[in-house]
Image (cartoon, rainbow, N blue to C red; front, top):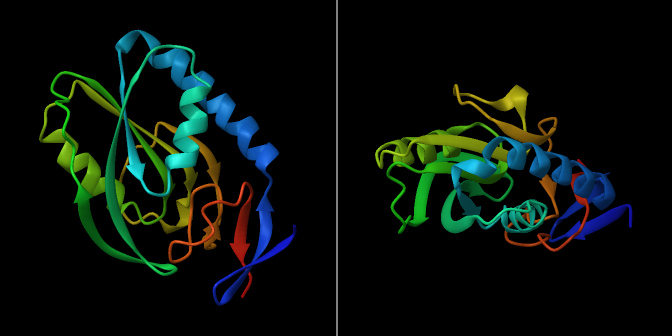
Length: 178
């Protein structure tokens, strides 16, 4: 399927599920090689990263702890730049190695706020992994340790990413057709 309709917008195929799975597996292997002996806590940011996180974590062959937090700065296809924490962190991360798993880093404001919140809880170290990064759109200085794809400043759906809560279920990534 090369074109999909989501609500009032059309989206064209951008990245195939095969390319996504291949790259996610490569990143999982990098993380495993670097962190398997550090007992990392994987902090998955909902909702968008749930499919990425599931595949990433299943590709790692060591026991790990996983928890979830929900933060958002999007309304429709635009980032608001205002981060809202909806569901908080319950586990203690003091002295722990934390790996934040994000679907997409756009302006970087959401990740900057996430890192600020986590630093207040005194972890030993924090790593950031993201399925997608929009390097030309990042407005703040953040360190991204692991990423699958750099992409242009296009709005995308699929593989967990949505347009007004629709389209997360597509196995491929589609970009909006203007």
